[in-house]
Length: 156
Image (cartoon, rainbow, N blue to C red; front, side, top):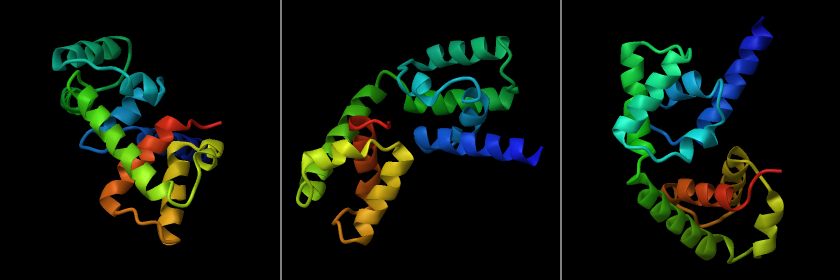
């Protein structure tokens, strides 16, 4: 029984890593990612009304969420995955690419990162290791760099 709970916790933690930080992330991970992969959520660009319809539909189809949980989920989703978020995502991707080109390619060739084929969690570990070894990546730049690497080079 504890193995099942540990397995569920491991899956939730891995899924949460694919979702941007913020209030409501854990709730969305628990309620949504038990049935869906994170990319199904992160690729959608809905307005607030669209997310309300989507969450309500999922509740009708059996997702367990009370009124306060519903509101927290909608707030989280509408703040991060909207039509306007696409331009914010593009800006973050451009920042990650710039950090990669100026910090990583100083020592490594393009082929080295392309061969890694890491998950987002793997890229976090890799970037942390490079920082420990002297890479000039500021803490404030790390998330954009990891996001860029994870989106550019997918896992095996």
